[in-house]
Length: 257
Length: 222
Image (cartoon, rainbow over all chains, first blue to last red; front, side, top):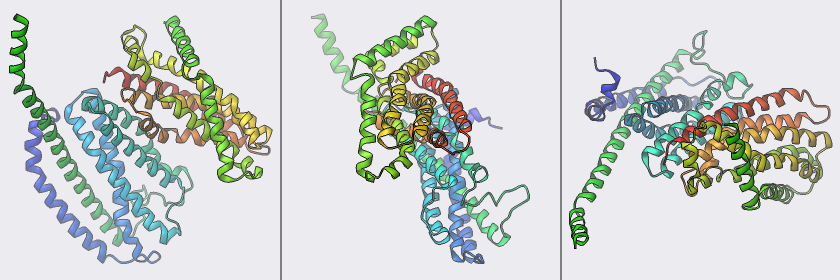
């Protein structure tokens, strides 16, 4: 049984992820094909009509926006405490993906809100806290872009990620703490799901498809980041090797003369 | 250790008063923000007095943000931050001392000036007092929350914009409870103590968390 530390070795990670990625991608495609088919053949909602199908994109995006931030925070702890390069890579790769899912969640929410609530946007606690989540994602992306030294950027991004984590429970519980227009939790509750099974099934399938998509994207982005770092190191090595000997010898010669 | 921290606060206050206009500049910026508002929404005093406390709070938040980017940057550039990193005093305490000095030099003057500017917006006397009182813990919370952003961007030459993007989301709860406190001081409003205590709790949490996170960020050399 390989331990987590042995998996965290970048070379082993590259080998394993190269083998796993095609399978995960295939499963993602299959789940999306099934999920979309079920989503479009599912019955309409008695009140919302066809617009209920927006939910099959909106709810998985919202879940993923929270899940990815949590993954990023766990990676941030790994990067801060153990200074593990793979944790940094995971953190950096997750940020843009999470940002896009948060954006998707807000856009599909607005498209759904217009026919249902009569407004693209309301300043309700759930919507506002997700908007704040998007701002936090954008801030973390800005740190990665602004700080050139990647090791330093990783520490700064990790700290910002952990500080921003306070927003995650606020997003999650906003519909319970405040009286919001956005509906409360209805899929997973203590009394069981409040959603009709004909609509719940496609939703869960789409959630699985989205999660698989995220895992595939995250692994691919991590592989890219590792390769980018290797390329950079090779470029630095190559640049420091070729012209250096000539200059050093001439300097030495000059010093001796 | 206490003497070192007092010396640090005195040094930062001295630097704040002698370089770049000192105490007055933030307040002048605050005045400028309040002064452009009637041009945008019109000089109707009824409307202005209704939105006055919120405007005073937004103005204080922006004025705090503008002043924050030099909190650690100047020390990083001239090397004094390096000395602070190596000193026997914990970096958290040093960050807290610098935050206190910064608050005394730029946060407290905003709270003191707020009633005067509120008068120009036609805010009723009781609400003026409430806004000023709410800004005292409010600016502490804003300064120490902002210190996190200042520490994260200390190594950047132009970190001001990034600083604002990073800390504005964190300042949302402070703004909510700050404006709630200011609104609660209006005549006939409900309890003033509840939002004020919540705001003070936020300020205390910001002092602790802000000092710890900022110190963690400053400890790693760029």
